[in-house]
Image: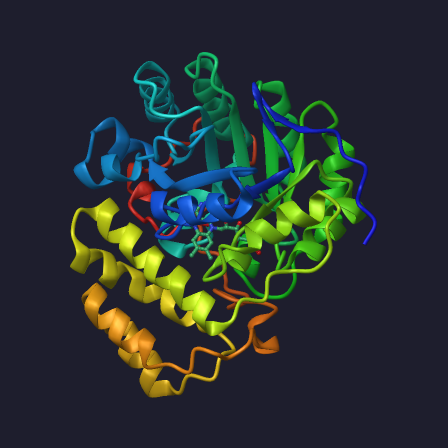
Amino acid sequence: MTLPQTTPLQIGPHTVTPPVVLAPMAGITNAPFRTLCREFSGGKGLFVSEMITTRALVERNEKTMQLVHFDASEKPRSIQLYGVDPSTVGKAVRMIADEDLADHVDLNFGCPVPKVTRKGGGSALPYKRHLLRAILREAVGNAGSLPVTIKMRKGIDDDHLTYLDAGRIAVEEGVTAVALHGRTASQHYGGTADWDAIARLKEAVTEIPVLGNGDIWCADDAVRMMRETGCDGVVVGRGCLGRPWLFGDLVNAFEGGAGQARPTLREVTAVMRRHAELLGEWLGDERRGVIDFRKHVAWYTKGFALGAQSRQRLALSSSLAELDEHLGALDLDQPWPDGAEGPRGRTAGTKRVVLPDGWLGDPYDTTVAVDADAESDTSGG
Ligand SMILES: Cc1cc2nc3c(=O)[nH]c(=O)nc-3n(C[C@H](O)[C@H](O)[C@H](O)COP(=O)(O)O)c2cc1C
């Protein structure tokens, strides 16, 4: 596949080559998962943390502070924040800058979860242009030399698109780059991502890099997205679930290489084991690590002939010894199955977007404020 013409992706002072970014995924892109992805990419690319809510950060919530954890070798350290109140967002960004907690701040405006949009948060928020602007102004104004980027969806639904306005507002407020997931909130994860919208945003926003996101399942998809949309970089989420070696494929493809990793089940289980171990070290508790790892089992084993019982046993392991026993009992010589290709993770489709009463009334309302409870969900994007 012909490589797109690219200039290096610049996120403030950070040059990202090749221009590939691990999408923030709540509950997934913690330090252990980022370590695995970075190992496969040879350290190339940008790896964004799980989403961290600004209020909890400012209040130094214990669990939240654990999420603000980077391996000593992780450079640049990329943190994603989610907040609905300009002042709290500003305080959180200042805290990150003053305490040297990260090298890059990304702001999440893509969450479609009803609990969040019901209050006007997440992907509902950019509809209120002044509130979006106020949040970005506080974030950039408090960031010192840290670059601030935003990640968003196309809008609430096809009749209420916000991404082009949000892109312009981001430029005007000094944001360093914008990433677009080519779906509306009402699409959730259904259908296919609209890469044309990424191209439209790239046409409208010429001053800062535009990153494309949505439905990159293999390295060829990433190259194709760059070529078809003209975007400056790609953000890859679900394609990496249970498949951190995709980052090796991405780097290889952008460096002109061909082919993709096709690990055998033996090789896959070695990565699974390491993932569980890293989670245990990060959480300071082997059992908690193995339990947290359970959610990854189905993704890692997708397409392999395991049988429901083995899958279930793996997903119920509570210690590394148990995990080893169950992994060891599998037919490890299985080659990489074709069934492992294509979509993985959430794919559920259209839902009505729950919004506060009257939310769609005046997009330029200057008085709107969002209840801080809209930060209480942590399920992400
Ligand atoms: C489990 C999960 C958690 C997510 N959490 C976040 C998040 O915390 N912040 C965010 O901006 N997006 C989040 N997202 C959305 C992804 O970053 C990405 O935009 C979306 O999955 C589309 O990209 P993909 O098709 O490459 O997966 C999440 C997605 C999934 C599947």
